[in-house]
Amino acid sequence: MPAELINGTAIARQVREDVARGVAELVATGGAAPGLATVLIGDDPASEVYVRNKRRACTAAGMIDQHRHLPGDVDQATAAALIDQLAADPAVSGILLQLPTPAHLDVEVLLARIPADKDVDGLTVANAGLLAQGRPGLRPCTPSGVMALLDQHDVPLQGAEAVVVGRSVLVGKPMAHLLLERHATVTTCHSRTRDLAEVCRRADVLVVAAGIPGLIGPEAVKPAATVIDVGIHRSGNGLRGDVDTAAVAEVASRITPVPGGVGPMTIALLLANTLTAARRQQGRADGPINGTTAS
Amino acid sequence: MPAELINGTAIARQVREDVARGVAELVATGGAAPGLATVLIGDDPASEVYVRNKRRACTAAGMIDQHRHLPGDVDQATAAALIDQLAADPAVSGILLQLPTPAHLDVEVLLARIPADKDVDGLTVANAGLLAQGRPGLRPCTPSGVMALLDQHDVPLQGAEAVVVGRSVLVGKPMAHLLLERHATVTTCHSRTRDLAEVCRRADVLVVAAGIPGLIGPEAVKPAATVIDVGIHRSGNGLRGDVDTAAVAEVASRITPVPGGVGPMTIALLLANTLTAARRQQGRADGPINGTTAS
Image (cartoon, chains in turn brown, red):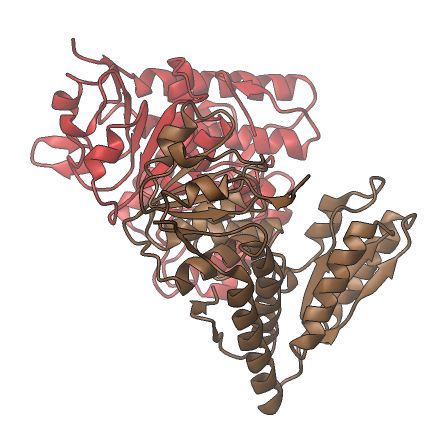
């Protein structure tokens, strides 16, 4: 029997509606609408599309679009000054520096100027440390989105064997921490893992974020496992992921399609993080968003 | 054939000698001797012993003992002011706040005032984030000590299956990161892990930091595995660890005894971190210490 498809598009829509409700409630109780500052440096067409989508989602949820655009030849000091200004601005709840930035800029230094409580992408060293130590902070959007998908499908995590393929700072490493926080037994695999299929076959929950099209086939999947595919690659036949979806769906019990699986969750969780940041900055309690408790 | 014993006492001595040589070289080339500020609050007898041992090791390595002692009823502001003063003092290379502190103090707030580059215990959120993101920082002493033991015995890590039992902020979590940095396939187990023995039996390298005396017996050990026991417990027959050493030694190829395994490494790596901190503060390059490169 083929696996149930995890409908990321529908779940992301729910998260965005929950965020919109949370924003409305914040405003109705005398708070300020959250403001999201997307910072775009230069004119990379793909980055422009990503930023436009984030800005649209932001205003659709009732938040204030605080977009800033700098020319591609801006110097480091000017870019840093903009981040500092946004950091100090109480109308800005969250700051998102769109990556990649032009090569002449030191992106690490720019990211480090984003205060942890406005780092809605969850990418700063400070938020990575808070996650590693299990303290409240803002979590990276894509792995948080995966957790929301698992929770929406009531996938049991406590005591489950979870395997994460990939160890990137953006996805793999924070993903492992989030699964560990929920009491899974977590294994991280990567390019040097000796027998990848054997290790993956142990997984009740398999999260693949390797960046290699079709890396995971049915021989690497335990019967009835839940398989989450974070990869997204352009191919001759449209988009595909790191998982051979059709073949793996014959083995797994649940699987995310590509597109329409993890992809839509990233922006949804960016909005959720921006609401969480605004609530905290305004001294409000965290609210649950679509079943996932902010942490 | 019983396993080879990993002699932590001897390896710790080597590390301390290497640090002493590094200190002498720093001073001989016009640098300042590293200063270690151990901060003890109150009169807990066990803490006094620990601090005394650290101070002795520090002076034996040619470093300057910058010990500070505050009364147990000190208020938060006074304790914080002392940390700030040490943070600003160029003669202080490293600050170690001895834990536990008296219950009326907010220890997290005190720890957060230690600058990342003087956090020789490697326990601050900032250093946890640097480790999680694979950037240079100061690493926690006990897991770094385990890495030094593995390196001294040339234990292969790349592609090896490593299992860490325990997920504490002090040991388990940073241990998993350090093993992952060295390209092991890393699994973290804990109290909710379903079949602990089965998971541990996959390990080429098994690091046990669970805090439960005798938790790991021979049924949980793969033949010829390397077993590192971080536990230390007082019992009727002296000290014992988390591993049933005698029985496991019949299965493993290498094992750390308790005492004399991991224990002596913690102070040795504290000294190594203090030297690393001093070198960086004085604009010097990192030096290798006993085969392990500072990171």
